[in-house]
Length: 308
Image 1 (cartoon, one colour):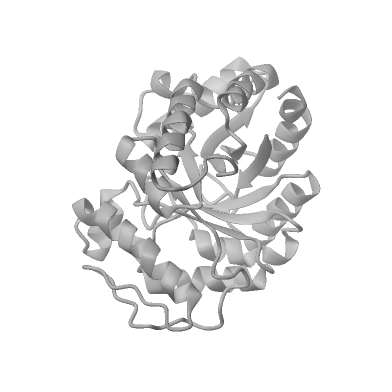
Image 2: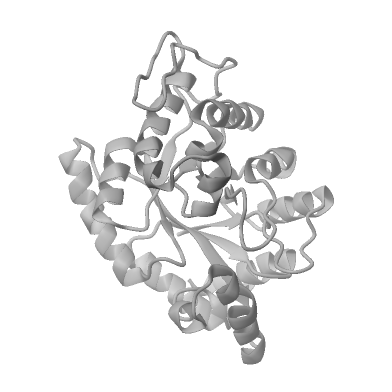
Protein backbone atom coordinates (compact mmCIF):
# COMPACT_ATOMS: atom_id res chain seq x y z
CA UNK A 1 0.00 0.00 0.00
CA UNK A 2 1.22 3.48 -0.91
CA UNK A 3 0.58 6.57 1.19
CA UNK A 4 0.12 10.09 -0.10
CA UNK A 5 -0.58 13.36 1.66
CA UNK A 6 -3.12 16.10 1.07
CA UNK A 7 -1.81 19.65 1.10
CA UNK A 8 -3.02 21.57 4.19
CA UNK A 9 -5.61 23.68 2.36
CA UNK A 10 -8.23 23.97 5.12
CA UNK A 11 -7.88 26.42 7.99
CA UNK A 12 -8.62 24.32 11.07
CA UNK A 13 -8.00 27.32 13.29
CA UNK A 14 -4.60 28.94 12.96
CA UNK A 15 -3.47 26.91 9.94
CA UNK A 16 -0.51 28.58 8.24
CA UNK A 17 -1.43 29.23 4.62
CA UNK A 18 1.86 30.87 3.75
CA UNK A 19 3.88 29.72 0.77
CA UNK A 20 6.74 28.96 3.16
CA UNK A 21 4.60 26.47 5.09
CA UNK A 22 3.15 24.83 1.98
CA UNK A 23 6.60 24.31 0.52
CA UNK A 24 8.02 22.99 3.78
CA UNK A 25 5.11 20.53 4.01
CA UNK A 26 5.58 19.33 0.43
CA UNK A 27 9.33 18.95 0.81
CA UNK A 28 8.97 17.03 4.08
CA UNK A 29 6.39 14.70 2.50
CA UNK A 30 8.86 13.97 -0.27
CA UNK A 31 11.70 13.34 2.17
CA UNK A 32 9.52 10.94 4.18
CA UNK A 33 8.71 8.87 1.12
CA UNK A 34 5.07 9.73 0.53
CA UNK A 35 4.05 8.68 -2.96
CA UNK A 36 1.49 11.37 -3.81
CA UNK A 37 0.87 15.02 -3.02
CA UNK A 38 -2.81 15.91 -3.32
CA UNK A 39 -5.01 18.99 -3.61
CA UNK A 40 -8.78 19.20 -3.34
CA UNK A 41 -11.26 21.66 -4.82
CA UNK A 42 -13.92 23.81 -3.16
CA UNK A 43 -14.90 27.42 -3.76
CA UNK A 44 -16.68 27.87 -0.44
CA UNK A 45 -16.64 25.58 2.58
CA UNK A 46 -17.45 25.52 6.28
CA UNK A 47 -13.89 26.70 6.93
CA UNK A 48 -11.53 28.83 4.82
CA UNK A 49 -10.12 26.74 1.95
CA UNK A 50 -7.00 27.66 -0.02
CA UNK A 51 -7.41 27.16 -3.77
CA UNK A 52 -6.23 23.65 -4.61
CA UNK A 53 -4.75 23.84 -8.13
CA UNK A 54 -2.95 27.08 -7.26
CA UNK A 55 -1.46 25.53 -4.14
CA UNK A 56 -0.39 22.41 -6.03
CA UNK A 57 1.35 24.48 -8.69
CA UNK A 58 3.19 26.49 -6.05
CA UNK A 59 5.05 23.46 -4.65
CA UNK A 60 5.99 21.61 -7.84
CA UNK A 61 9.70 22.36 -7.53
CA UNK A 62 9.96 20.97 -3.97
CA UNK A 63 7.73 17.93 -4.54
CA UNK A 64 10.58 15.61 -5.51
CA UNK A 65 9.42 12.54 -7.39
CA UNK A 66 5.95 12.44 -5.85
CA UNK A 67 2.95 12.04 -8.12
CA UNK A 68 0.83 15.19 -7.98
CA UNK A 69 -2.92 14.63 -7.83
CA UNK A 70 -6.19 16.51 -7.68
CA UNK A 71 -8.41 14.50 -5.33
CA UNK A 72 -10.68 15.80 -6.62
CA UNK A 73 -10.95 18.80 -8.95
CA UNK A 74 -14.46 19.84 -10.00
CA UNK A 75 -14.34 20.78 -13.70
CA UNK A 76 -18.04 21.66 -13.74
CA UNK A 77 -17.34 24.54 -11.33
CA UNK A 78 -14.30 25.87 -13.17
CA UNK A 79 -15.39 24.88 -16.67
CA UNK A 80 -13.66 22.09 -18.59
CA UNK A 81 -11.60 24.44 -20.76
CA UNK A 82 -10.15 26.41 -17.84
CA UNK A 83 -9.63 23.20 -15.85
CA UNK A 84 -7.88 21.49 -18.76
CA UNK A 85 -5.66 24.54 -19.32
CA UNK A 86 -4.59 24.86 -15.67
CA UNK A 87 -4.03 21.16 -15.08
CA UNK A 88 -2.25 20.78 -18.41
CA UNK A 89 0.19 23.44 -17.24
CA UNK A 90 0.79 21.61 -13.94
CA UNK A 91 1.51 18.43 -15.90
CA UNK A 92 4.02 20.27 -18.09
CA UNK A 93 5.74 22.03 -15.19
CA UNK A 94 5.97 18.81 -13.15
CA UNK A 95 7.44 16.81 -16.01
CA UNK A 96 4.35 14.65 -16.44
CA UNK A 97 3.72 13.73 -12.80
CA UNK A 98 0.03 14.65 -12.60
CA UNK A 99 -2.98 12.44 -11.96
CA UNK A 100 -6.22 14.33 -12.55
CA UNK A 101 -8.84 13.22 -10.07
CA UNK A 102 -12.26 14.68 -10.88
CA UNK A 103 -15.68 14.52 -9.32
CA UNK A 104 -19.09 16.18 -9.41
CA UNK A 105 -18.58 18.04 -6.13
CA UNK A 106 -20.81 17.62 -3.11
CA UNK A 107 -21.54 21.25 -2.27
CA UNK A 108 -24.73 22.91 -3.50
CA UNK A 109 -23.23 26.18 -2.23
CA UNK A 110 -20.42 25.91 -4.78
CA UNK A 111 -22.92 25.43 -7.59
CA UNK A 112 -25.13 28.26 -6.39
CA UNK A 113 -22.13 30.56 -6.41
CA UNK A 114 -21.47 30.02 -10.12
CA UNK A 115 -25.12 29.76 -11.17
CA UNK A 116 -25.24 26.15 -12.38
CA UNK A 117 -28.08 23.93 -11.14
CA UNK A 118 -26.77 21.39 -8.62
CA UNK A 119 -28.94 18.66 -10.15
CA UNK A 120 -27.01 18.96 -13.45
CA UNK A 121 -23.68 18.09 -11.86
CA UNK A 122 -23.45 14.45 -12.93
CA UNK A 123 -24.39 15.01 -16.59
CA UNK A 124 -22.04 17.98 -16.76
CA UNK A 125 -19.22 15.98 -15.16
CA UNK A 126 -19.53 13.26 -17.81
CA UNK A 127 -19.29 15.85 -20.56
CA UNK A 128 -16.46 17.71 -18.82
CA UNK A 129 -14.32 14.58 -18.91
CA UNK A 130 -14.90 14.13 -22.64
CA UNK A 131 -14.17 17.79 -23.29
CA UNK A 132 -10.95 17.81 -21.25
CA UNK A 133 -9.64 14.75 -23.07
CA UNK A 134 -10.34 16.43 -26.41
CA UNK A 135 -8.61 19.66 -25.35
CA UNK A 136 -5.51 17.74 -24.29
CA UNK A 137 -5.41 15.42 -27.30
CA UNK A 138 -5.40 18.30 -29.78
CA UNK A 139 -4.79 17.56 -33.46
CA UNK A 140 -8.38 18.32 -34.32
CA UNK A 141 -9.96 16.16 -31.60
CA UNK A 142 -13.44 17.43 -30.79
CA UNK A 143 -16.14 16.85 -28.23
CA UNK A 144 -19.74 17.88 -28.75
CA UNK A 145 -22.22 17.61 -25.90
CA UNK A 146 -25.40 19.20 -24.61
CA UNK A 147 -23.45 21.46 -22.25
CA UNK A 148 -19.92 21.72 -23.69
CA UNK A 149 -18.40 21.90 -27.15
CA UNK A 150 -14.65 22.06 -27.73
CA UNK A 151 -14.80 23.25 -31.34
CA UNK A 152 -11.52 21.54 -32.13
CA UNK A 153 -9.46 23.75 -29.79
CA UNK A 154 -6.40 22.02 -28.31
CA UNK A 155 -5.22 24.59 -25.70
CA UNK A 156 -1.53 24.27 -26.53
CA UNK A 157 1.03 23.74 -25.12
CA UNK A 158 -0.08 20.16 -24.72
CA UNK A 159 0.39 18.29 -21.42
CA UNK A 160 3.62 16.35 -20.99
CA UNK A 161 1.68 13.08 -20.81
CA UNK A 162 0.13 12.14 -24.11
CA UNK A 163 -2.66 12.18 -25.02
CA UNK A 164 -3.19 13.70 -21.58
CA UNK A 165 -2.86 13.00 -17.85
CA UNK A 166 -4.76 9.97 -16.52
CA UNK A 167 -8.20 10.83 -15.14
CA UNK A 168 -9.32 9.13 -11.95
CA UNK A 169 -12.96 9.59 -11.04
CA UNK A 170 -14.16 10.16 -7.52
CA UNK A 171 -17.14 8.07 -6.41
CA UNK A 172 -18.45 7.22 -2.96
CA UNK A 173 -19.33 3.77 -4.31
CA UNK A 174 -22.84 4.01 -5.73
CA UNK A 175 -23.71 1.78 -8.66
CA UNK A 176 -24.09 4.78 -10.95
CA UNK A 177 -20.81 6.25 -9.75
CA UNK A 178 -18.90 3.03 -10.28
CA UNK A 179 -20.35 2.66 -13.76
CA UNK A 180 -19.09 6.17 -14.49
CA UNK A 181 -15.63 5.23 -13.22
CA UNK A 182 -15.57 2.16 -15.45
CA UNK A 183 -16.92 3.96 -18.50
CA UNK A 184 -14.93 7.18 -18.37
CA UNK A 185 -12.06 6.80 -15.92
CA UNK A 186 -8.48 5.60 -15.73
CA UNK A 187 -8.75 4.98 -11.98
CA UNK A 188 -11.09 5.21 -8.99
CA UNK A 189 -10.91 7.48 -5.95
CA UNK A 190 -13.01 6.60 -2.91
CA UNK A 191 -13.68 8.99 -0.03
CA UNK A 192 -12.17 8.11 3.33
CA UNK A 193 -14.97 9.62 5.40
CA UNK A 194 -17.76 8.20 3.21
CA UNK A 195 -16.81 4.54 3.23
CA UNK A 196 -15.27 1.81 5.36
CA UNK A 197 -13.16 -1.23 4.46
CA UNK A 198 -16.17 -3.53 4.09
CA UNK A 199 -18.06 -1.13 1.83
CA UNK A 200 -14.89 -0.32 -0.11
CA UNK A 201 -14.16 -3.99 -0.73
CA UNK A 202 -17.67 -4.63 -2.02
CA UNK A 203 -17.52 -1.57 -4.26
CA UNK A 204 -14.15 -2.69 -5.63
CA UNK A 205 -15.65 -6.06 -6.50
CA UNK A 206 -18.62 -4.36 -8.15
CA UNK A 207 -16.27 -2.08 -10.07
CA UNK A 208 -14.52 -5.12 -11.53
CA UNK A 209 -17.79 -6.23 -13.04
CA UNK A 210 -18.50 -2.77 -14.44
CA UNK A 211 -15.01 -2.61 -15.94
CA UNK A 212 -15.46 -5.94 -17.68
CA UNK A 213 -18.83 -4.77 -19.03
CA UNK A 214 -17.08 -1.65 -20.37
CA UNK A 215 -14.45 -3.77 -22.10
CA UNK A 216 -11.68 -2.95 -19.63
CA UNK A 217 -9.57 -5.28 -17.53
CA UNK A 218 -9.90 -4.87 -13.73
CA UNK A 219 -6.28 -6.02 -13.42
CA UNK A 220 -4.08 -2.98 -13.10
CA UNK A 221 -6.97 -0.51 -12.82
CA UNK A 222 -5.73 1.76 -10.00
CA UNK A 223 -7.62 2.88 -6.92
CA UNK A 224 -7.05 5.15 -3.95
CA UNK A 225 -8.83 6.34 -0.82
CA UNK A 226 -8.66 10.13 -0.55
CA UNK A 227 -9.57 12.67 2.17
CA UNK A 228 -8.46 10.30 4.90
CA UNK A 229 -8.53 12.74 7.81
CA UNK A 230 -5.70 11.85 10.18
CA UNK A 231 -4.44 12.66 13.65
CA UNK A 232 -2.00 10.33 15.40
CA UNK A 233 -1.79 10.65 19.18
CA UNK A 234 -1.61 8.39 22.19
CA UNK A 235 -3.60 10.93 24.19
CA UNK A 236 -7.21 9.75 24.14
CA UNK A 237 -8.60 13.11 25.20
CA UNK A 238 -6.69 14.87 22.43
CA UNK A 239 -7.90 12.51 19.72
CA UNK A 240 -11.46 12.90 20.99
CA UNK A 241 -11.11 16.69 20.96
CA UNK A 242 -9.88 16.69 17.37
CA UNK A 243 -12.72 14.41 16.33
CA UNK A 244 -15.60 16.09 18.18
CA UNK A 245 -14.52 19.74 18.25
CA UNK A 246 -12.74 20.05 14.91
CA UNK A 247 -13.74 17.46 12.32
CA UNK A 248 -17.35 16.54 13.18
CA UNK A 249 -18.63 20.16 13.17
CA UNK A 250 -16.79 20.85 9.91
CA UNK A 251 -18.43 17.87 8.22
CA UNK A 252 -21.73 18.58 9.98
CA UNK A 253 -21.89 14.98 11.18
CA UNK A 254 -22.15 13.38 14.61
CA UNK A 255 -18.75 12.28 15.88
CA UNK A 256 -20.08 8.75 16.42
CA UNK A 257 -20.77 8.44 12.69
CA UNK A 258 -17.12 8.90 11.74
CA UNK A 259 -15.23 7.72 14.85
CA UNK A 260 -14.46 4.24 13.49
CA UNK A 261 -13.82 5.33 9.88
CA UNK A 262 -10.62 7.33 10.13
CA UNK A 263 -7.03 7.03 11.41
CA UNK A 264 -7.54 9.27 14.42
CA UNK A 265 -6.04 7.91 17.63
CA UNK A 266 -3.05 5.86 18.67
CA UNK A 267 -0.59 4.49 16.08
CA UNK A 268 -1.98 1.00 16.68
CA UNK A 269 -5.59 2.13 16.15
CA UNK A 270 -4.67 4.01 12.99
CA UNK A 271 -2.73 1.05 11.61
CA UNK A 272 -5.59 -1.35 12.35
CA UNK A 273 -8.00 0.74 10.27
CA UNK A 274 -5.56 1.06 7.40
CA UNK A 275 -4.67 -2.64 7.39
CA UNK A 276 -8.36 -3.38 6.94
CA UNK A 277 -8.35 -1.19 3.82
CA UNK A 278 -5.22 -2.93 2.55
CA UNK A 279 -6.89 -6.32 2.99
CA UNK A 280 -9.98 -4.99 1.16
CA UNK A 281 -7.85 -4.13 -1.87
CA UNK A 282 -7.02 -0.45 -1.40
CA UNK A 283 -3.76 0.28 -3.21
CA UNK A 284 -3.08 3.77 -1.84
CA UNK A 285 -4.39 6.04 0.90
CA UNK A 286 -4.06 9.81 0.99
CA UNK A 287 -3.94 11.18 4.54
CA UNK A 288 -4.95 14.70 5.57
CA UNK A 289 -3.58 15.86 8.95
CA UNK A 290 -6.12 17.75 11.05
CA UNK A 291 -3.51 19.84 12.91
CA UNK A 292 0.27 20.13 13.37
CA UNK A 293 0.59 19.17 9.72
CA UNK A 294 4.32 18.55 9.33
CA UNK A 295 4.61 16.88 12.72
CA UNK A 296 1.71 14.60 11.81
CA UNK A 297 3.33 13.70 8.47
CA UNK A 298 6.41 12.63 10.42
CA UNK A 299 4.52 10.75 13.09
CA UNK A 300 2.36 8.90 10.60
CA UNK A 301 5.44 7.89 8.58
CA UNK A 302 7.46 6.70 11.57
CA UNK A 303 4.77 5.30 13.90
CA UNK A 304 1.91 4.10 11.68
CA UNK A 305 3.21 3.03 8.27
CA UNK A 306 5.60 0.39 9.69
CA UNK A 307 2.64 -1.21 11.49
CA UNK A 308 0.61 -1.40 8.27
